[in-house]
Image 1 (cartoon, rainbow, N blue to C red):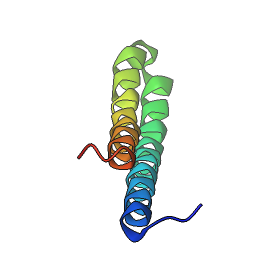
Image 2 (cartoon, one colour):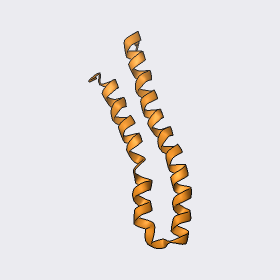
Image 3 (cartoon, helix red, strand yellow):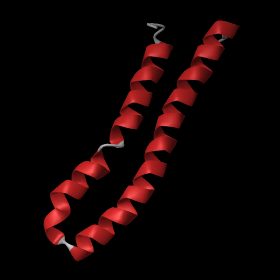
Length: 76
């Protein structure tokens, strides 16, 4: 299978979008997770609030994945 240059560039852009979303999520959750465990250790009743803050960065990888698929399908 031979790829032309525009297809190769779109594939690279899609992979960068997905990887960027995953790395951003990991970096955000590392700080939030450490702080969240400290809060839960001191105040267990704050579990629901900490869980919400821990789930918010998950949207980064979802956005990266959707953007990657949009690039691969050449919808943009």
